[in-house]
Image (cartoon, helix red, strand yellow):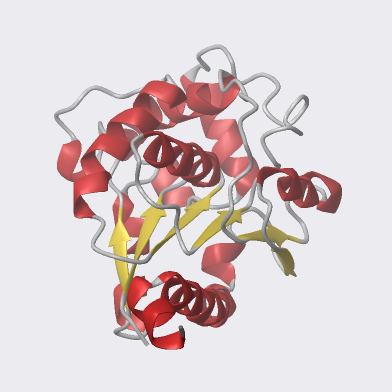
Length: 254
């Protein structure tokens, strides 16, 4: 089986480091490449972005030269929207589509009327802390650490604006499979998750996992098993299709 890159996009308030441990837990043929966003981690000195179209176009220009063959895209929550828009931006640059796109923990782009309500304007520090408590993904000791909060809250505020100001643009559907993951206790309903089907001409899968919004951490082992199993199937399909399209193979069969 060929090796493939897996570009992973973080959720609101996070850096690419949330995916670093996946490198040790997935097989060698699957090369996890966390995508750092401006304003955090290794890109802390760059300005935070609140325009998703501008951000994904920037990321596409940065990542297109790094694509070395078959690749996949994974994103959770905000990262799922970013991943979806990134694939479209890469397609606009002339890059091949990914072997598969994973949209985890968020409603489909066409089903966000109520999902992002209240996120279009900057939130106060107290409102952001309340949201973090509701999402149950931040330890209480972090919420009570003023220095850490001073670093986290500006990033979270900008990321929430990315979601709240997101404007869906209808384009021709993708041709790659789309795998959707949801948390049984998260706010995204199965209907909102299944609406991702409209964004691809290929197959779609939906897996509901126990837990809330951060089920990717609560049930990491299962998430990684699903990633590996789906990508094995999708990569074999990609290789078969590439073989069929090879001029050499057509000549041999003539």
